[in-house]
Length: 93
Image 1: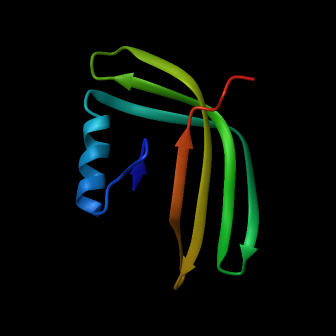
Image 2: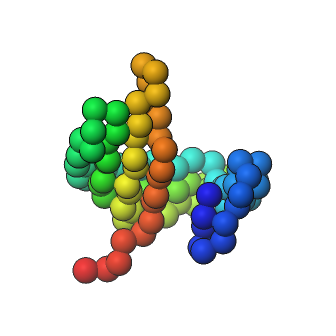
């Protein structure tokens, strides 16, 4: 995982960083406004989209903002799995 330019070489290190980032968060809801899927091959596909995230904290406060997403899926056996994922806040227009 790479976050803010820093490489986390192991799954355990990446998971620890993600868990720290979600401390105090009760829930995250993402509403997709658009989604596009591009077939890269018979075993790979790219999903891009945008929408609005609503984050609710454990103390009840909530806030929302736009997000952009890109996800690369690969077919492994009979299941589609995410090989690469990226969520971010898009630049203002």
